[in-house]
Image 1 (cartoon, one colour):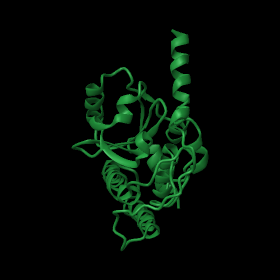
Image 2: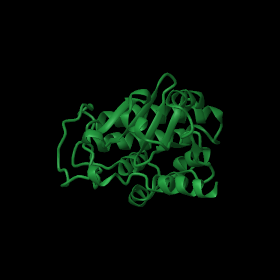
Image 3: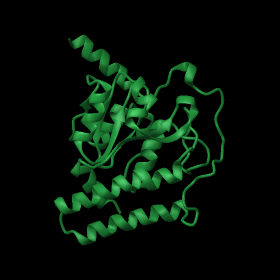
Image 4: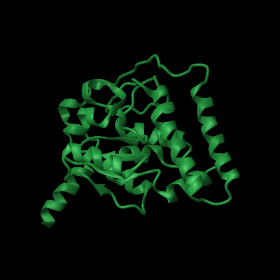
Length: 236
């Protein structure tokens, strides 16, 4: 039993280390035409996020259920819709580290940590992006145990996500990571997709080849972790 548990953990710690035959022969240097509203620059968009966060802190003298609900709605909409409009189709590359949507390329771990950094969360973007996704998740939510959903059938996995409720989650797979977003109606997987080198993609969980291909699925909730959200509010 201990051997099996150790083997599963070892596999999980290899997250985002793609098989050799999936690694690129050369680094991608591409510029993508983004569908986002070009009237608002990406820098201005990030400034608006910081401003909204500040308003949350000003309007609420303590972290309560009302504030939590507003923050969950904000995170879900911002990551699932606003960020995705800027980052859509930005190419995937195993060595991709771009901080500019539509320019260069981005690996799966860097996509997750760059979005969190641009959400104005105080993190070490590079360090977390280059470690195993299990360690990244534990670092972000140290008081929250990783939820192992690997044992579920794929249909049951999707149903479980719906039961967990509206919010933003990080998922760790065999060799990949990304955001799961439950918007209250649908479960979405938002990630830098290595399959076919598609790059940043938003797809229904039930339609994701990357999710279906993974034997392991570990999850933490970002918006359900009040310590993380308090840290976010406190970061100037």
